Picture 1 (cartoon, rainbow, N blue to C red):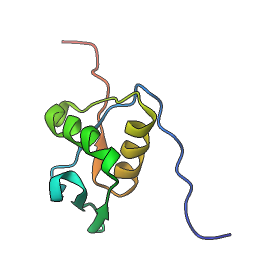
Picture 2 (tube, rainbow, N blue to C red; picture 1 turned 60 degrees about the vertical axis):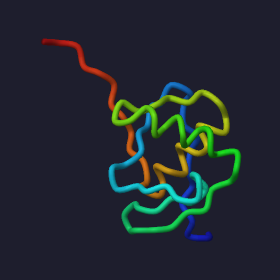
Picture 3 (cartoon, one colour; picture 1 turned 135 degrees about the vertical axis):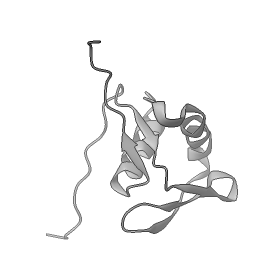
Picture 4 (cartoon, helix red, strand yellow; picture 1 turned 30 degrees about the vertical axis):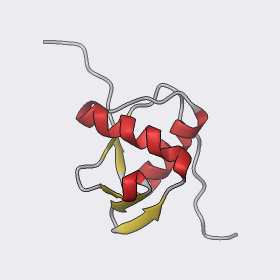
Length: 91
């Protein structure tokens, strides 16, 4: 056993938002933040998905593409993003 925990793929309709403590550098190719704090290098293909997450703000984004879901999973695992709960009915 390697000690690495296994991450499961996110469903296509699972919204996430960047955490308030996450900073993006180098045109979105480097992210810092999380708990514990870390620096993460991201692939060029992540750039448009990160830009969309930034534009979405606190409301988050449910990216249905495989790349967007993989990025969201990685950001969640590193504490750089947070899940956005579904709105609750009621007054």
